[in-house]
Length: 370
Image (tube, rainbow, N blue to C red; front, side, top):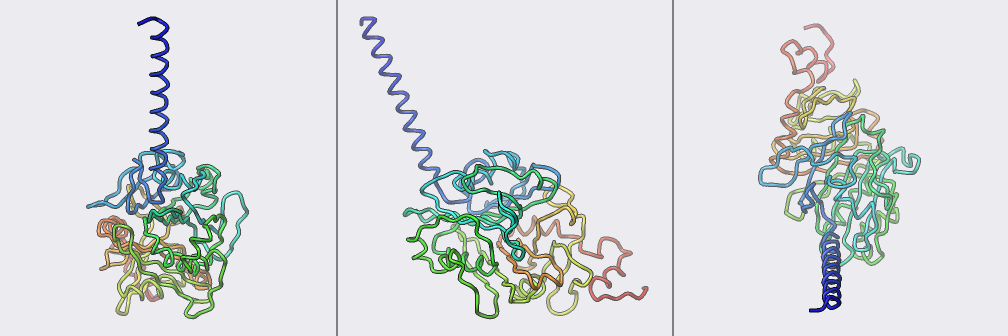
């Protein structure tokens, strides 16, 4: 074979090799265009929960599995690649025609605070094609997740603890999710949901167009499942409900004892009598491998005893919160419940034998010496 023919043949091989690589890249990109929760390894998962402790950018993740337990995240939350949050929201922070989005926050990125009432923050991802894929991502971080702005962590929030929950859903549950969000009175800062999708989901349309809630009792309680059939209960508490998220909504709706991690005032006591109790978790606590104080943590949650359920919430446990809209997203899973229940072992007034007086003060306001 002549040198000239060899040169042409080698160039042909090189061109074919490049073509194959490009095809593989395109195929990889197309298969990656999904509206589901994604873990650090880029695997689709049914759900995950991430906790970032105060004063660090490292985090821990607990995700759907046979026996879910806390594990250290592969990357830090400020990394734009390789972390479950960045991977899940990749089609929100960068353009992807197949994935449509809706995002809401009381303090959105690149804007001044927009809503002094609702504290709800989250993103809906919906596949615009025939694929039955949707994901609901809720979080606690102000100035976080700019639509099409690239993934960026707000450095001012590193000092605080933050929590993130992602649920993989079927499109059939979009109405349930949208109605719960609507009762939370959110500020929507990003939305490109197409008219065709809104026509199929009336409550999603009501959320987007800002249809007001006018029907008592101004509380929404939605029940649905994830793609892999994990039970979810989502609550929306409207301003006009004048209800406490913990004492009235969660404790009564679940009809069982609950333990809560949320800022409280002196007027909001633990409820230690009656059929169902509400107890405040003592601060500091050991959670997901870190010692966390109430003052340094933006995360708010409740453990629902006897139900294997954990709820992420937005409200403080204070008297004034009855006039503030609120959200609770509750996931039933024994492993998740055990992970949170272990952290919630110590309750206000029960850390030491000598704190029976504190227990009485917290439960009933008793102030006489013991």
